[in-house]
Amino acid sequence: MDAQRSGAGPSHLRVLAAGDHFVAPDLFDDALRAELPGADLDVAHLTAGWPTDPFGPVGSGHSVVDEASGTEDDLIAALDGARVCLTQMAPFTEKVFDARPELEMLAVSRGGPVNVDLSAADRAGVAVAQAPGRNAAAAAEFAVGMMLAALRRIPVADAELRAGRWRGDFYAYDEAGLELEGATVGLVGYGAIGRIVARVLAAFRAAVLVADPYTDRATAQADGVRLVELDELLRCSGVVSLHARLTAETRGIIGAAEIDKLPHGAVVINRPRRAAGLRRAARRPAQRSARRARARRVRRRTPAGGLAVARRAERRRHPAPRRRDPADRAPRRPDRGRRGRPVPARRGPGAPGQRGGVLVGGEDVLMIIGVDVGTSMTKADAYDDHGGKLASAERASRLEQFADGRVEQDLEDVLGSVADVIRRVAAHRGEPVRALALTGQGDGLWLRDADGHATRPPISWLDDRAADVVRGWQDDGTVAEVYRRTGSGLFPGCHAPLLVALGRDEPESLDRAAVAGYCVDALVQRLTGGITVDASDASLPFLDVVSRTYDDAALAACGLSGRRGLLATPASARTPRSG
Image (cartoon, rainbow, N blue to C red; front, side):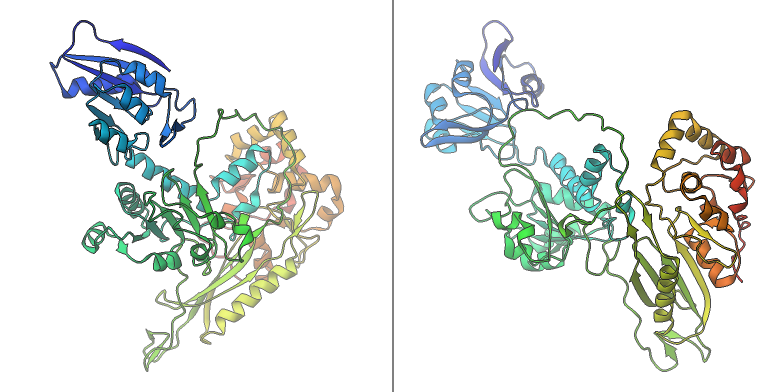
């Protein structure tokens, strides 16, 4: 801690600007002079060590203050002759007030002056001012950032990538997390920070619930939030953020019993240092029942020491997706709605002359079925002519994952899953099916013969067997050359490196194949007999998207000119694939 004087000569009012390395003394000095132009001020500066040095309790006996930086002795010395002090976290204990009876006013630039012994200040006759909500915007933005980080698994993905692991399985439906849009977010406490959080969430189009006994319904209604009791908030919220200030009334307001009321996979944000916190039992989700919640909170004390500088991770093979403890899975609501909102309910029986609530006018409703063959789940929805949703069905996909990084599927199992979900939605009303739309996971390598049967197990886009091929292409410039010609990047789970890896390790599987394609292409071939590929799938990595033909130079750069015949001709623009 060091002190210096700003200004010279006799002064009318001596002031101490006791700052730190975040709120520097000259900020106090400049602000004071701007507010009091022409005033005869003598401003001394004192700089505490925070945030380089951690803050914490300062004092002894019955007069100990919290979240303070610096020492009592340094502060007493710097206060010599000062009648006013401006500070953020200088330690004003009884010892300091007793040593400087000339002090008349203390202004603390924080929402709660926890670094001041208010009882001692009152006995010394020192007026204390504070700045409620000074950092409300920053705190609110940080809280929303934590929501996004937890919902979208940003810290986990970042840590995995820094460790040299690409977690492609995080793209799977069950692993990708939720979106704030359409989610229900509960705010426990609705002060300055909570109200800003609510405004930010409104931009995300999230539904906001508030539990705060000191907020009236008129205020909540005007802000577009709904005031509820804590119990209802917990039962209805996929995200809960704590913003009530720490008091005897709010200390440990969330415990194991409250956590168990949350929907499965809910996120709990315990952001502020002095907020109503989680009771210790609530911080051990692994010791509770299967209903789990994620909690993100700050430390009660700033950790000693600085932050370690992360080193660049060594390149290594990416491991296959591994099974994890359920507590490490992405947040997921029971209804599995990706945007946080419930999956639309099936339409019930309508009035006479209607089916599913849709007026049919004496004619049959023709059903349209859409199927998404995802990596972890095959899903089907049925719709009527007016876009009304009739039914939904889903079935988990099977992935065979090997220790060496290979990830494969079974074409017959995938076909069985598609047939199963189609049957289930088609049976909902029994209407004729007008059209079937298919979409599915991209990339990977699905080798088939002329009749559409697999010549080897389909390779998932999560597969890692060709990682060494891609590394070699990065080193010799092949990746850059393909990108220059087609605009496509290369990764281990796409066609080019997988074809090279199979040509090296099991060329017979390529020799038996009539076509190398994608998941949807394999399904279309079995359903219609046609061999084709969607241009958007084929665009990675060989397709010239302007001419919609394969770029021979890109194939040659990858050493695959001899396998050109395995690539199906892309479907022409706006041409449905049917048979």
